[in-house]
Image 1 (tube, rainbow, N blue to C red):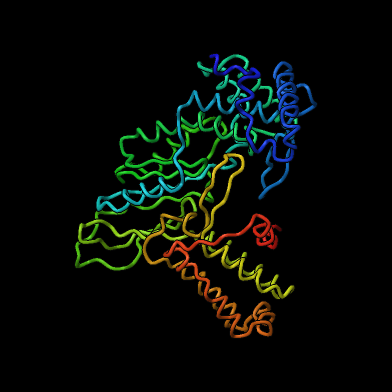
Image 2 (spheres, rainbow, N blue to C red):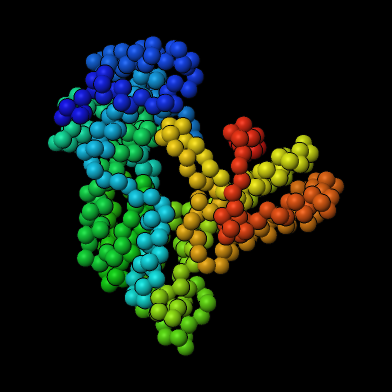
Length: 414
């Protein structure tokens, strides 16, 4: 277990370039040495070198935890890395889950769809069960176990329950604790497809099972403390074998939302007898975009800053590159790269384009009245040149400086 040791050598490997972002080049070696000495001291004292390495803040109604001091973050990174190396499990990304789900739903055989959400995922794990689980991890060194349990105690001291939401350590630990549930649900004789993204679960079955018994069994297999959220879960009726061509229509026989997408099954098949599946942006995401559009136009009505309005529209309707300083790599983002699995009518993207037109060409409501006197024909044309559908289909790109992105997002940060 030498690779798990929390030595100066191992902790040094957890240091990133971004850790020196605000440190002068001439001072970086001194800062590194200080950081490692503090980390080693904290390892020896099991995080008791301070009253509590954690603090918390509210975000979207949840208590989120963070590690304040730099040297404690090094220890957390090392612990997380050690847990990852034990599991060997790579969690699937949103896009691959949805793409595989589409392939299964296209099949013309009967099936039933279960969409489950776990209530208060991180907070609901039983604290004693977490400690017991950590203690039973065979390939984890005793020192790693002590530090993990010490951090959980510090979390408990702040009034936290379960595993601290917000820490990368929690994500890996809870994934490990969910492995048994994943295996049992996937291994059920009626399961065709199973996927879980943190607390969002999708299961496709043969439709031969008793749905109530199947759900109860699944919930029973959850780690102690966890429960399905009734308000966010849904189950379809049995969807029968695809119909003959004479009885087919363009109607949707079932729709559900999963991982930011709205997935709809048509009462129709293609020439290969595959069901036609429509995948769109989820309705909840559409509402979020509409709020951002409204705020952008309200800010324009207040400030008259035309170029900032146009840049905000370009930011929402197109694609761009984002540099992640922690991972030290560039990622692609925007309307296409956030929803690459969209296929079919793109109704919700068209809906968003219609919303922009309504704001610009209509005079209804408070915002319409505010805008009517500020928009001339040239500006209207510039605004309407921005389209969610075109930005998606053409994978159109825009470039902004980090400072400009900050200005663009400013009206949405409240």
